[in-house]
Every structure is written in C-alpha cells, then in structure tokens.
Image 1 (cartoon, one colour):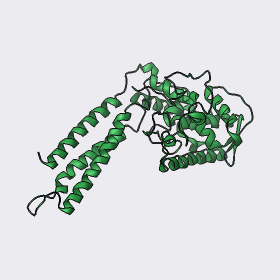
Image 2 (tube, one colour):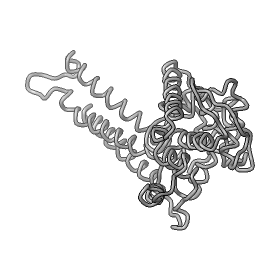
Image 3 (cartoon, helix red, strand yellow):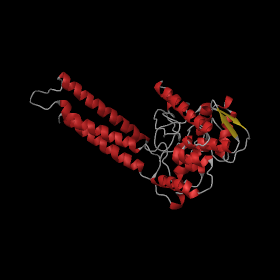
Image 4 (cartoon, helix red, strand yellow):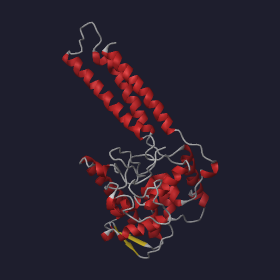
Length: 342
C-alpha cells in the first residue's frame, strides 16, 4: 500500500468513527411532552442564553423594582436586600463579596453560583439541554482531525516542492493525490465541531420557541412585560433603561476581553471556563478537568476570567441556598457544573 493510499484509509476510518460518535453523542433523550414546556423565567433565560442571560435577567428585574441600582462605571448597589428566588439571592450574596459592586465581577460570580448552575442541571435532567461533558471526547477528536488534516496537506505540499515524494514529470504531484483526503478530513472534522455548538436538544428548542410565542408583545397585549422576561428572551440589548442596558453590555465586553487575555496567556486554569463573550455562546474549552454551564445555547462564551475552584470557582459567588444542592449532580463544589457525563 502506497503512502497516499495509507493516508486515504486513515482519514476515511477516522471520519467514519468521528461521524458515528458525534451522531450518538448528539442523540436527544426521550422525554415526556409534559416536561418540555417551561414558564419559569429563569429556565427560559437559561435556554435562550445560558448562565449569562439568567444573571442579566436577575439584575434587570431587581433594578426595575428598585431592589438594585446600577450606574456608571459599572457599579451595582443594593437598595433593598430582598430576594424572591435563589438566583436573586445569589446576586445579593455576590454583591456582598464584591467590593465596589463591579458589575463584570458580580456577573461572573453569579453565573458560576450553584443557584444558576443548578438550572442547567435541571433542564438537562428533563432532556431540554445536553450536559457540558456530553460529547467532549468527540469534540477533541474533531479538533485533532482538522489539525492533522491541515498538517497532512501542508506536508504534502512541502514534499512536492522539495521532491521528496518521488514524483516525476509523468505522475500526478503528491500534494494533488492527497488533497482530497486532507480536504475530506477538514470538512468532516469541522462539521462535527459545529454539530456540538448547540446544547439545546430538539425538545429544548421547542420549549424556547413556545416561550417566545407565549411572551410575544402580540400575545401579551397591553400588559407590560417585566424587564426580567424581556432580557430572558432577547438579551441585555433589549433593556429599556439606557443606563442599565449599556452597563450590562459593557460588562459582557469586559468579560470577553478578560477571557481572551486568559486564553492568549495560556492560563489553562482560567481558560478552562472562559472563551468568549459573556452572553453569546457556550464554553467548549477542553483545557481543564471541570466543565461548567457557561455562556448560551449557540456560541462559545464562559463564566468569567477565573477558573473553577477556590474563592472564584463554583460557589464563590454565593453559598448553596435552598434552591440548589451541593451534590455531585449539581454544580456546587469542585466540579463547577454538572460533573456527570451522559
């Protein structure tokens, strides 16, 4: 068997294994239809935007009814220390641990809090979301295949240029012979990586669409929608209060910048839970042993610039309240998110 044939065989076998593994890991669990709908604002926010969206919804709701005050430059103060839900209690607890009430720091602490992380666990238990660890090995394999295929193509080009492939004037250049295999590996690997970008299951997507339909302005009619549900469904950009809207968007940008700096510096302890903007996507970093629910349903963000563990890890923003548990199935403790893999 020639070198080119061996490369084709390796790429084809790797691609088949990767596709089968990806399809199996993405297979949605069977759920009862009664478990799919959700009218809980925090679950809606988590489905739409992950922990970041939940945190923004809580801050917007508490600012709207006068329990919090948010002003420039990104400072949050408590006016009435009253919480109606464990998520809101997590905000108050995080504020007590945040000197100066810096919004970006507060946001990251609340996102990692057990009260927020437990929402993801609950949705995963109901089959509306896929857990962070699900398919992690196949995502790594997809990364490796794309990188290996690119190296294969580059190596073939160098061998052709230097003449080490043994080509002559009457044979097809080596790089041309292996290019289809390399391209196949890159395409299959990239598609399998994209397949893992959404943590929503089909049932979760259906529940989110139903929530949008039930809370649309036309359905609600003349009723005024709360700031929490507006943010839960559409994000911080839809906040009516111009000051709050700008401060939340600035906090997201600050978290994204901090995450980028951590990743660029090679700080795996920090980058294990952060990769991009605070509300635009999920964290798929494989640099650490712990994976938390971070970001949102379709992209690649994290919970802030700190890794899991210590005072800045899971539970660093708030203590375990009655709304969340410190069991291995929840995100409290050393696992910073659900530690079970399906």
